[in-house]
Length: 496
Ligand SMILES: Cc1cc2nc3c(=O)[nH]c(=O)nc-3n(C[C@H](O)[C@H](O)[C@H](O)COP(=O)(O)OP(=O)(O)OC[C@H]3O[C@@H](n4cnc5c(N)ncnc54)[C@H](O)[C@@H]3O)c2cc1C
Image 1 (cartoon, rainbow, N blue to C red):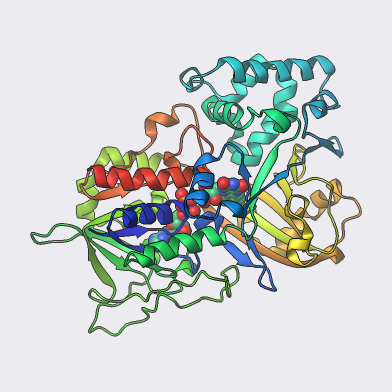
Image 2: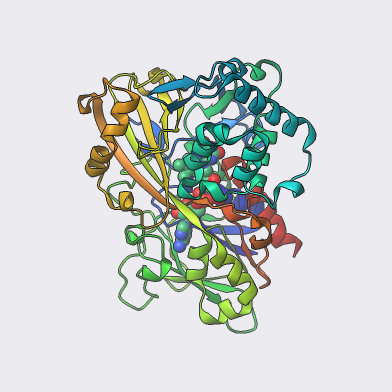
């Protein structure tokens, strides 16, 4: 089969790799001028690659660890002790070890004990997600632990992930977090270990791309799908219409992309290896350049036997023509429309000195306008980056939030009072460089009853599969689960 895979994030690359292993030929279309989707890297200078959004792995992330092994890259993953804090009541409180919980001043000693016991009981006894699917995390926590732990610990933790929707998040999501990630054994029970690849996530993407290309496929970056329809005639299949290079500057909605002209028409573009230089796009991201050039078929349109879309749900719907949308049917489309995403807004700062002693700080002070501080070089030594230090200032925001419209300078101004609260000595003189990235479909909002609204991988139209982060449940979406999802998507296509 010739298969079009839409999206070169982890799920798309893994899916195309699995299909290639089964002898199928895949073209991967990617809107961004680089590989990796939400885990994509940027060159922060001097050839040093760093993810646009902070990334690490947990020891429970077995699917991605197995993939590294399978590709002969097991040695890439390094496991380092994590350090975590909560910022509230004017200071950072260490929250890394069980002993830190006992010393956590913002809660009374009985509240600390009650909270610790509730977590332990959940981990020991609650083996099924079912009982947690009809209650919010807030209700469960206030009932089992009390209001203080919600206000000072869990509320801020969920706000760090779901912004203003924290109160509505299903307990199923938190159950999965607590039972999967936190069941730490051996040395890890004392201090959690986090994984990070020695050369960033980029080498994994390169290896997957090389395997796809070796099987006769192509990985086409800066080459979005602009539209998708059923191919007419007896052969069946689908037609993918490509958008011109640079379409990523127009945002996510594929209906806003200008299409590559068919052969014979005057073409605006068509070189899939073209690199963009817009702010935020990788000027040169080592090894991400697709090997093959687009073309073939009829210029901007190509026919495929099957399509696997790994794009966000709203993007997927935007690709469909009326005929394909009605073939998919209103029930499935309803599930796509029920998807609610929050946008990740991530300011990456290069600093000339450490900001704090912690890798990860959850912000529990409601007056601070961001939700987390992730000091990457407190997990990975600055030596890896020629002595440079990097701090991510993290936020998850509802679409339309005014902070999303700010330039890096304006955002830094808005964040400055909050940064000074956490580190009073901080000054803009510490900043050597800054980058700002926004990811509209960063975080699906997992509310009560979410499991009933998940669209199945098979869309109901033979040969058309959807595989995106909304279908990862009850686990927290992450690269590990996108590896699993990519494999499942390939299986869903082949089994049909
Ligand atoms: C702030 C932040 C922090 C995170 N931290 C971690 C972490 O610490 N650890 C971890 O494991 N995970 C983390 N994640 C999550 C992880 O990155 C994602 O869950 C995972 O990468 C999703 O992969 P995916 O392939 O399923 O989706 P995506 O990465 O979203 O891939 C979808 C791809 O489709 C492309 N696309 C969109 N429209 C089109 C179109 N029209 N045509 C072609 N292509 C298109 C997109 O550009 C993208 O490349 C984080 C995410 C964010 C935002």
